[in-house]
Amino acid sequence: QQQVKQSPQSLIVQKGGISIINCAYENTAFDYFPWYQQFPGKGPALLIAIRPDVSEKKEGRFTISFNKSAKQFSLHIMDSQPGDSATYFCAASGTGTASKLTFGTGTRLQVTL
Amino acid sequence: EPEVTQTPSHQVTQMGQEVILRCVPISNHLYFYWYRQILGQKVEFLVSFYNNEISEKSEIFDDQFSVERPDGSNFTLKIRSTKLEDSAMYFCASSIQGVGEQYFGPGTRLTVT
Image 1 (cartoon, rainbow over the protein chains, first blue to last red):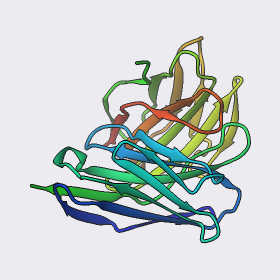
Image 2: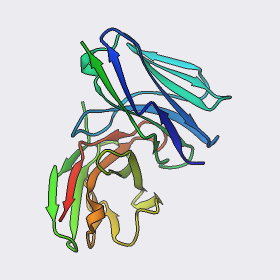
Image 3: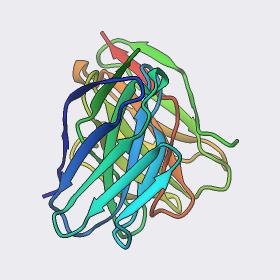
Image 4: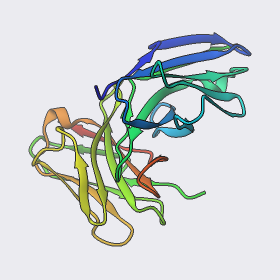
């Protein structure tokens, strides 16, 4: 019940295209859903996050869509660029002090020219 | 921009040896975490720490592991007797509120031979 399932495992998108990565969760106690971007040899960097009281959040080219009833959320990268090529992790955490992040398995995105 | 720092960037040790991984969290953050990532896999929670005590630990965080905040700036992870399977990237993270955004350091690559 603590798992966060992420798909696809890898994704190839042409420059200028839309990248879409999906995640699903089971634990209804989760109430914070961030996306992290990780480049090889680096730590995960917080990209964008959402809470269940909104269905969508947009920051620049990055949008999170959230479907509370389906317990799913997704990351959309508009106008994908080669510099977006990285591994993306969704995550979730619940309430309570020092809530841990439960990560998805990651999506390796490659944006081609 | 404030960031989490970690030292060393790479640590090679022999099986059975003790290692200490060091982290300097963002200065006004109060909640601290350790995560690990085995090569090519997802990021896994190890332990959270607040107010000088462990808030939560995972099943990975057994008696061989310990954490400490020895002074006002450092946060350490000690592995008493390393095993081959401890080889991974270890990430420190910090959070100002304990719920929501966690900021990750660049990681320490631990190689146990």
